[in-house]
Amino acid sequence: MPFRPLRRRWAKRPWVAAAALLGLLAITLGVAVALVVQRWEAAAGATSAGDAGAAGSNSGALLTATLYYVTEDGRALTRQETFVPLEADPLARARAVVEQQLTPPPSPLLSPFPTGTSLRAIYLADDGNAFVDLSEDVTTGHPGGSVDELFTVYALVNALTVSVPEIVAVQIMVEGREVDTLAGHVDLRQPLEPSLVWVLDDEVLESPDGPDADDPAGEPLGDEAGGDLGPEGDDRT
Image (cartoon, rainbow, N blue to C red; front, side, top):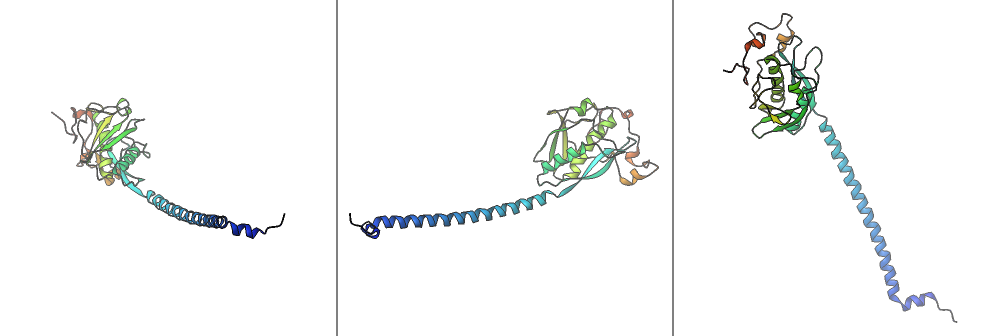
């Protein structure tokens, strides 16, 4: 059988050569596209990481929150500044403030909330009214008495309205339900606006002689006042 050069076979079948060339071009194009896609994904990943880093640095910002605790002698509330994460959402800021307010204060200050009181939920209406749902410990563990109840209520109301400007008034709820009072004295049937009547300023608090007799917070605070206490702490008739 005579020898036939391979080139003659290719020459007689030009479509085979064309197919091989097209296959080679397809492989080359596929590799090029894969490299372009890989580079694009790497660039996109670097951008996302940069954005995440920027977001992380922003999330490290802090908000100065004003909390309210009972003085060592139990006669008034006093301010205490602390820091909570600065959130763009006012509801998130409000939650952080309430959770911080419910934590034990530094000595010798006293918490106005019964041990175990926790935040169940918090809601913020468009009109600026906040609704704070607390656990039942705030009522079952409450010592009672008009003064202690005033401290409990207005520590929370003041902390939220002072620390979160979007909040103008606060209504306290218990276990998801509206309540008339916590211990029979302060009317909680409507949102309460802030009141600093029961708060000592720093100068009075630091004075060794105690509150000035002319200061409202220096007046005797006790159950002898009698009656239910309305939103401003006045006797109701």
